[in-house]
Length: 218
Image 1 (tube, helix red, strand yellow):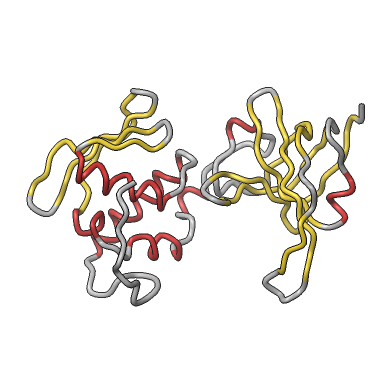
Image 2: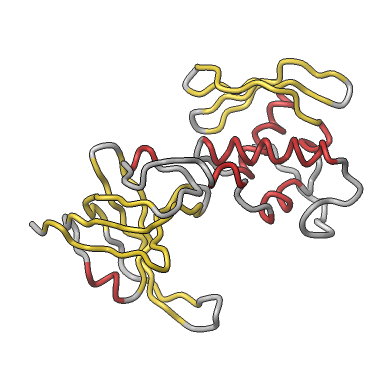
């Protein structure tokens, strides 16, 4: 990625003095990122690289700047060489050094969290922002627990285990007593969990009413 260094972020949230269309373009980038399970900040950087170099890559995505017209540029996104999106974007939103700060403070778009989907999900179908879903998978990796400081000023143990089904695998965040409940090769059923973004990738977490049950021990 092309770094944009040396410019201090002076405020959080929306940059001042920007038009409504400016934020529409930014929200388009965020929505695209959540739809395709990629980090929106890195996706924004990839758009910036495509504007500078004409073509840039991020994982399975290829972004091409096809045309520049005054204050906008038309971008094409391909996933595994198949076109999935094309639209003009405001160049000011692409070049603005505050774009990362805006993205960090922008919530998941409402229309992404309100999509209709079945509660019972396969791992390959999971998207960041899904809530109140149920998953069955097998524990295939269990790292040692780490002691971390929580936002409430206390300490807790956490282990980001990996669960898998016949479609894929994903990290599952377990805390305190939950960690000792499972071992590698345990088949577990998760209820009322949600998909969060951690370090740019999807991660399963149990909600307040979430449960984890061992359904088939070897």
